[in-house]
Image 1 (cartoon, helix red, strand yellow):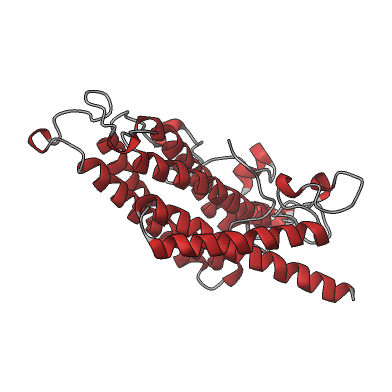
Image 2 (spheres, each protein chain N blue to C red):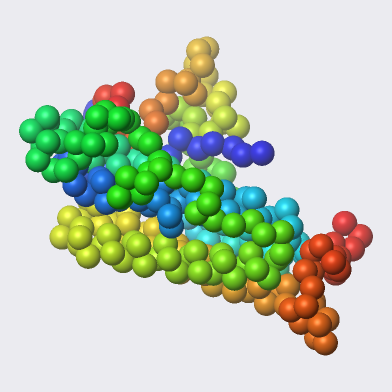
Length: 208
Length: 93
């Protein structure tokens, strides 16, 4: 269950439209390392976590990613609001415009539509948590790529810096969640089984 | 007067964003450090501040969340009329 708040996690107020930059940034909405994929990855993977700590981290980070996809789509919306036909045609935004006008649709910067193959949910906590650590780094690297393009436009760079910093924090929390799962594994059988499927561990769930 | 109102509305929203962000970050931290007393004390402090600010905003400018939808004395449904956060001030887009 979720509760909606009519505010952004970090405020965004972009006054100057820019179709080219909108096309770059939309990748963090529906692209391979975007916020939709992040959110669906964590909210799907949480069911296979073997202890409360790892489940909580996936649940709460997955929830924060919903706020991030709202931020990224807000940036794209504000960058494409009030575009002139002339700018649409000369900026390279034309192909997107033909299919979606200036509506928000999840695709990568290169036009590839969002699809669930951009993440895994393996049903194995160690496998999934390692993917999550990599996912946070990939998203951080994408925000770094965007920042090199927008660094002189404060109204865009500001919220992108906020989003980048959150990737760093999430990486940290996933590392701690991974350690909590690894510490509960049988040391003689470290990677030989799936701790969720073959040998569920209920250490932190007793009496609950 | 109008300007002053707009100004305090923006300031109040900014305060809400700030305490809410502190809570967002502490929430993830406490998930992996559940015995941290300092973290717990900060969480308690920020959630109290946030509750007060959210109520104050709802009473003066309308609800930000449905829990506060009837905080003001209006007899119509204000939740729907509240602007979405991507809109330009005074417009609907």
